Amino acid sequence: MMKTFPSVVIVIASALLTTSFKMGGHGENQPTVQSTADGHAYVRSIPSGDYGDEGKTQVFRVRKNGDELLDEYPLYMRGELYLGGSPITGKSCLVHLEPERLTSNDDFKKLGKISRLAFYMGGKELLAYTGEDLEKMGLKDRVQTLVYRHAGQFMVIGIQQRPLTNHYVFVIEKTAEKGSGTETISFDITSGKLFRDDLEKRPEPKSPANEGQSDSPTHKPNLDG
Image 1: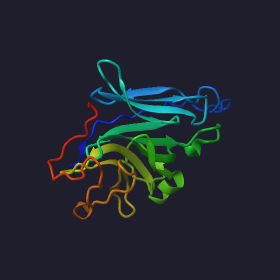
Image 2: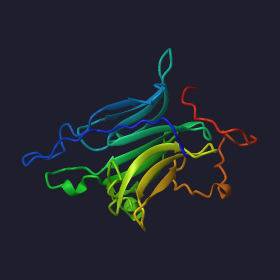
Image 3: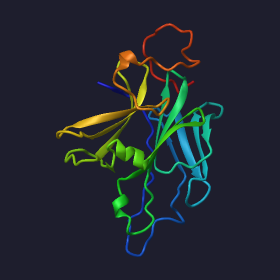
Image 4: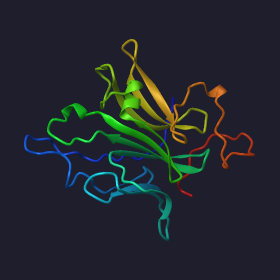
């Protein structure tokens, strides 16, 4: 069974659509901040305007004499943020799940749609998937539960540790392409690439954190410093 790594989820609430209201403009973007479950690190995303992605997102480690800036990204991240870490690289990893923008009262078909899934580490964007990319993977409509399991539905599990390894992955559960069951899709949080289950044939990525070191027991990523 996978071990779940404490992660951060930021959900920006959206207003209800009415016949006379269009979402967008003033108030669409809101500053957000959230800590990890243990309270030792946190992420905040601050927009420069009422809409769009101009702004900045920062990851901090809590310190007694002033918080330490770990990473900074020159954009505002609307939607959900998942904060984790990798013991392989020794860096914090950020996953951004951005929903489709609802710009009018005719946008109900966009509810549950994801416009972008992006992975970040060390102040840089690693890899990003468009909504079209995700639909090709069978990720069409996000739901909170897969009880009814209609084709194309999926739910986000979050960041988890692969058993008996130092790998952490971002996991999504979706309805199976065949039958009535479900299946998972995992993304390596240190690259954003799909993580394959064949671990014996997949070596850990080389990094300054593990080059020249012998095999050691698995351990949790440390955001405490």
